[in-house]
Image (cartoon, rainbow, N blue to C red):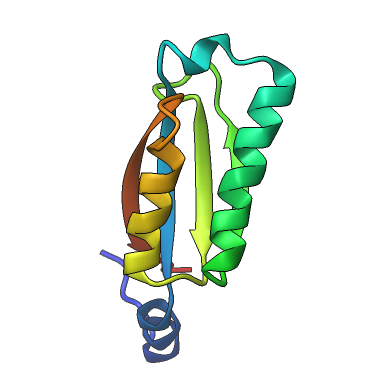
Length: 102
């Protein structure tokens, strides 16, 4: 197993990255392009309000429809964002937290 240097371990301990695996619900699968953009904008606003940064990836054809990578937020904010993502009923989000290794 690869060992993490002390300097890398310090960085890894300092910032948790939150990964959201996002799947469309039946309601979400019928969203038009404009409604989808509004949903993305609402989530991005939640992340910015919490002081974080968000990157969203389309992953059509995989086990989830989108993956969102969010950094710069607290664990409590991540939970609130997950609740916000799911609040409209168009998607289901699975939250995973991780430490960057390299």
